[in-house]
Amino acid sequence: MSIEIKRLSYLPENFYVINNVSLVINEGISTFLGQNGSGKTTLMKLISKLIDPTNGEVLINHINVKDIKKYDLSKIITYISQDRENIQGFTVFEYAEMGRFPYQNFYGKYDNKSLEIIENSLSLVNLYEKRDDLVNNLSGGEMQILRIARALIQDTEIILFDEPTSNLDIKNTKRVKDLIFKLKDLGKQILISTHDINYAESISDFIFMIKAGKLIYSGKKEKVLNKENIIDCYDLETYEGNEIKLF
Ligand code: ADP
Image 1 (cartoon, rainbow, N blue to C red):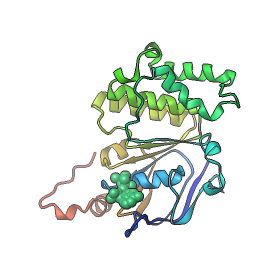
Image 2: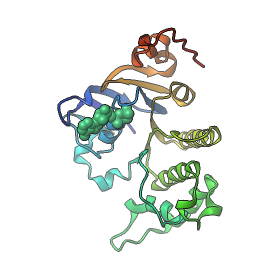
Image 3: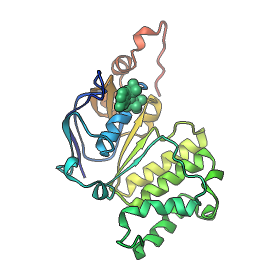
Image 4: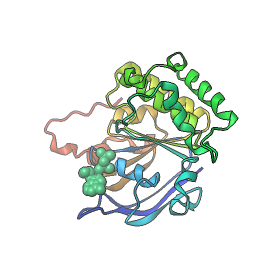
């Protein structure tokens, strides 16, 4: 699977939220890293075709997403947003089951494989025992883990995580990270957005630094995550006496 972005721009009003970004992602765990408001979420929404670019293109496996039907794209890409969905009243199982929507037949029924995939995925993330609980009663950490189970259930080769650990405590951050590594081992291509340098360092193979809608540095984590690039990306020279302690 490859994601290729060519001269992509997004100009909803009078400023470029995304400004002439080109990049290629082929393997492993990649991270969009940058300040709040730098455009990371917008890039993810453009890749998932939730919004359309003003200029440029997104190619998945060399096919322009413009030419892929949303329904077909949902068998290739899962986007896990940071927005809270309105899902009151669903059980854990029902929420997980929604991940199978691309595989429903004409009558709204799921294929035979679906039940097995749902049960296996809930077991993998240790939520099988809670399958009949209402999602309203899950903690923030459990809810994020359930979202990952749903991504597994949707069974796409590419998974986008928008700020996967925002609002999670250390233990749940670690659980989510371990699950993301498990997804990588299963051969999934993972794309994460975060403003957290240490988190990016701990999870990424490749880093794409985004600043004010532009891609400023990209490549292997070891190459990109250096002091100069971080100072530039986060405008840290404006902080007097700032000591950066990395890793
Ligand atoms: P990040 O995920 O890096 O925090 P976002 O992609 O959410 O950044 O947003 C980047 C900036 O673009 C923000 O200032 C946001 O308010 C602005 N923005 C995003 N979409 C629109 C839009 N449709 N109209 C106007 N401004 C937008």
